Every structure is written in C-alpha cells, then in structure tokens.
Image (cartoon, rainbow, N blue to C red; front, side):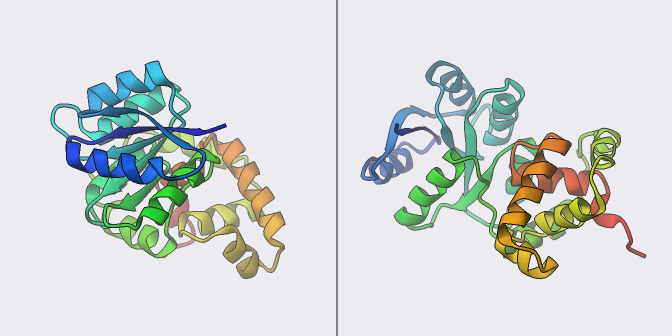
Amino acid sequence: MSVRVLLADDDALLRAGVAVVLGTADGIEVVGEAGDGLQAVALCRSLAPDVVVMDVRMPGLDGIEATRRIVAAGLPARVLVLTTFQYDEYVWGALRAGASGFLLKRASPERLIDAVRTLAAGDALLDPAVTRDLIGRFVAGLPDTPAQPAAHRSRLAQLTERERQVLRLIAEGYSNEEIGDLLAIAESTAKTHVKRILAKIGARDRAQAVVIAYQSGHMDEGRP
C-alpha cells in the first residue's frame, strides 16, 4: 500500500520539484498539492494523506497554524516541516503545534524520501544535535507557550523512575540505540520504554514527547 503524501507550499516550482522526487520513489504517491495553509487543512480532510510535507511560511494561514488544526482535528496525517534554516524559531513552533519532524529544504532527494517513509511508519524525524540546539535556543524564550504544564505534569507522574530517565534522553534527542548504550540496556528494551512513555503521556510520537518534557518542567528537575 502506497504512502499518500500531500504537499503544502506557496512556491509552485518547489512543489513541482518535490512531487517529481517523491514520484520516483517506490510506494509513495503524491495525492494533492496546497498553496497555503487553509487549503492544506481542507485537503487533509478530503484526501486523508499519510504525510503532509509542509512549508511553514505561507500567506494567509501559515504552516504552524495549519499543523495545529490538522492535529486538533484528529486527522491521521503526520506533518513533515520543510525549513530553510535548521535553527529557525518557526521549526520549534511547528513541533509544538504537533509536527512529527523537520527537514532542511536543501536536503537530498534520498533524505526527503526517507523522511516521508519514516513519518509514515509512525516515527518522528529529529536529528539529535539539531534538536538539542534548537530547543536550547527557543524553548525558554518563547512567550506564547500553551498553558498546559499542569496537565503534562499529571501525566508524567505516571512514569516510573526509569521511564523518566528515558524521557529525559528522548528530549535531549537521543535515539533508541543511544539510550540503550547510555543506560546499559538493550535497544529493544529502550524501544519498549519509549512506547510505554508515549502511551502514558498521550504523545503521538517522539517529537511531541520532546515538547511535553520541556513544557512540563521535567527537564528542569534536579537542576540548581
């Protein structure tokens, strides 16, 4: 069964290029194109894509608000944000809105195809080094953080001490393999911990878990 992809970008030439790249990949089908955020939300409802390749800077409704509406509506599509700069505050905004990953527009065709497949499989696309730096730059200074810390903390209270350790490592951008190495456990055990954590805190994927960990104050625990 093919991965159904919706492209959302106000640059028609860029959309055409991405469509060509994805069209060459086995098992990926571009089912629609949107020139702005409103159209992207509408097409998500009517076409039910698996993945939306979303630009953040679009006229009218931008990619951040479009992502927020897609997630709030409970639509199954995973959002892959395309950005020009890896440290752009728009990227953090999109992750907080519910995006499952981000990719630089200058990424190779192979990287784009792999990213679409990764999100379609239910995983998040977060580069560890970029994630840690991005959060360090923006999470503390944004004034419009949603008023949800209490709800997040209530969910985090369900976690075991080991799961709290694993969540901290997820939020710092480590992969399952790296978490296993750091905690001296098998990668499969780390993966099991991650699945349980996502279920307990109500996160769709690792990207949302990162946001919850920081917004709840979990990453500040134990700091002087």
